[in-house]
Length: 407
Image 1 (tube, rainbow, N blue to C red):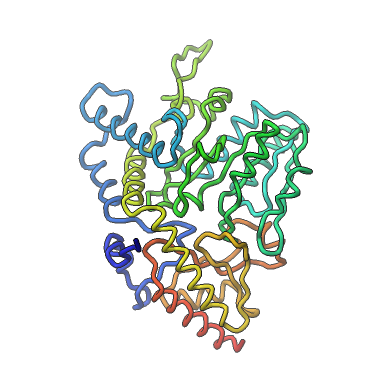
Image 2: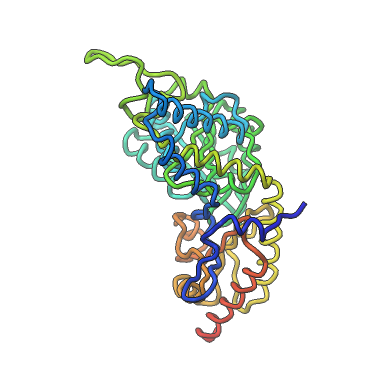
């Protein structure tokens, strides 16, 4: 069954907006997605009707807010098929979730000379926390490279793994190349050596059916705002045995069982990792976004985005001077490209004046740019509400820029 894109678009009020007098064409979905009315209304409803701090109140509103927050946790558990709600930790997003693991796992499980393996296509948020660990503990970062098409050179993984390898941290889908990585295979390989794996699911969760138990991931992280939910809320899934084994990330209220000046005992999972007042408004709005996606069907969304990707790449191949960055056979719904010697920023600026929102620059993945010997790319990323007509508008915009620069 195809998507009814026109009726979906009606759920996203911002898509009616005019930019410089032109209809908005929003192709910056990999950075953040737009929100459907039901998510925006859920946020308002939370503040209007049941705003009270959760878990600690005996009064009605507090109980109501607590129930909604914990129902949201169950909603997330179901969405990624985790074994238990104890394995679902709410964070501020993918970045905080990775930092949490780098801090709690890194400090307790790693010592000087131990190794963490990441890939060459990681977002900075899956590089820098491990470099901070390196500075604190003297661990070593090893890098799994990709080839000229943006495909990981999996055959090199065996030689990278040593008896000092403590963790492999890998993107499910590259935010720059669109490559869908064979994470299940990587996890299987890692587990042969008893090495846990963290999967950065920021770019996969809105586009691919994710089953953490089937993948056998030890940690899986993602952000709400990339799957039509609010900003400032994200999820860390961790296998219970790992979450039990590692110390809390932050101290404060909510993550404690008992506090005296002599000694503090920590709360059970998942609360051990949720210090302070959580974003209970955000968690319930995230649950609403996940329900919205469930209702449409992630498989239907994936199919629609694949059709858009194929349409865009076919059309774009005809543009003189077009160079795609990332040609992996398995790709998510985004295109990274350059045209002739036009600087990505110039291309982005011209497209913006035509009402077309794309992302330009290094996309927080500078090692990818270094690998291709470029400064940056133009990235058009697709979502369920995008159309082929919008891609045609993008094509016309790229052609216009190309003629302006006489390429």
